[in-house]
Length: 101
Length: 504
Image (tube, rainbow over all chains, first blue to last red; front, side, top):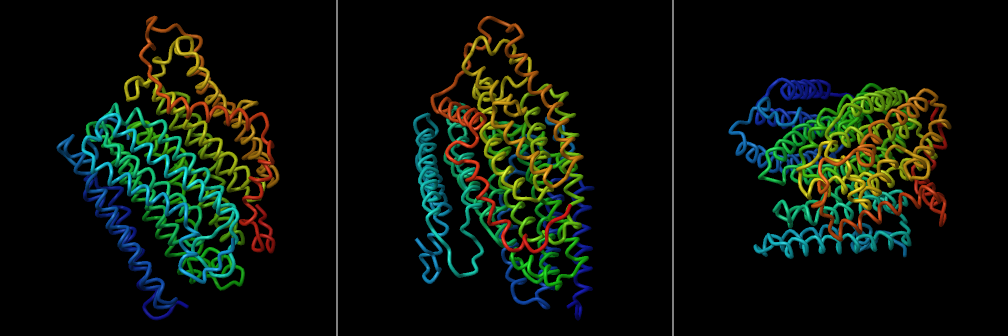
């Protein structure tokens, strides 16, 4: 089943996912953390596209679902970041300390 | 009626409760924007009433679906009794949360239209999650629910804490979505399908790629752990529950948790019963650590909202035992427990909102001193909810725990059963501490609780929740309710489970 460039594509996608995960864990700027989450989602998209070469067209279809959901998430997420920026004048999550985190 | 999906209309009928709620959500949203005077009391409460009407009609549609049989057609959404029972839980959570938030929304001057619309959309997401047979649709439902809840957590724009809770929930929620989605992709890669029946079939026929599947299941489990706040993944929970507006917290602690549990119960019972080695140890440890850690941390909390947050994590731990047990008894027990948990947790939050003057003012445990004697009715209600959360005999929480234990013992999970009992005993301390403050401590002033304000809608919710908890606690099998619950999980343990017994 694993033919062609499939393995390579899956490895790249896993690598991108790990980069995104580390980004979320290491960076403290809310916008950068959000970008890293988007990187994770796009790593998954790459997996879907690669797998769809072997498994049929559904994989490419799922990419559209994921992109739509990511766009909706971006809209709500950026609105939340703006709303917290109005209170704190910063988007660094280390400064948000009313709650204990 | 019989749905064979020969015409387009059958698809709409199969999704009737979801469609009704979506339509009402849009009506509430547009009406809320339309009437700018809706900031006033009457406007905001009429929007809440519209949301309730939507929920009642959706409940009617849900009841109607019991008379419908599905023939043919490989749908992504199934009509089975499991989905319909799950819908009852979500509709109940939605209705109770609307009832307890009416006065809060008005007092805090929050945009009512947005709150109720988002609540209805979140309920739709939950219904899709529990009713689907396809991982991608499960993902869509999860996101419809989660995105609504991100916005709900941050809905009070004047409150710093609310914004902070929203950001934290959003970042960690989206992060966990990434894991969950990667799990779907890997499972799809391993089995060639996202249909959970199809996955089960691919595993049975041996065409699934082992290592990919193991990774896929592990990632799905991580995403699941975040959503139900199991302990290594619980960091966001106390902060978010403390910072979010209290009615939203009640909704998050019950509806979201129930949806995640029911959706994943279906996934793991139907799709992965043949590969228990891939997920049994993960969930075993999640359950054990969650029960122990959450109960221990809850002991030292002085903020009641935060204490209830840890309590909800602990209840998540008890429920994971039901997933680990993976038998019909335990799954039925989870349905029963989630129903009771929804009632008692929303009830407890309702009293907390009331004590906090329909706001976020008095949340420390000292603020409850002497509360019971000055507000006897509310005091008795809170005591009932706390006793039920603790699992006292005579309450629904006790019966739920007994069934969970029964399921765990049937699956021979001796250690987990012992941990569950011990954790329950530990939890008595922090639940009863609130009751002790309420009845045994002197109030700071003779009129300390005089301005506690409980509107009619909240009293209706409290009476309903407390009445059901006590009734189900004393007569659990009245009207054949237990058989009804048990038969609701039949569809999860059909042919697939009969072929290979899940040996833990």
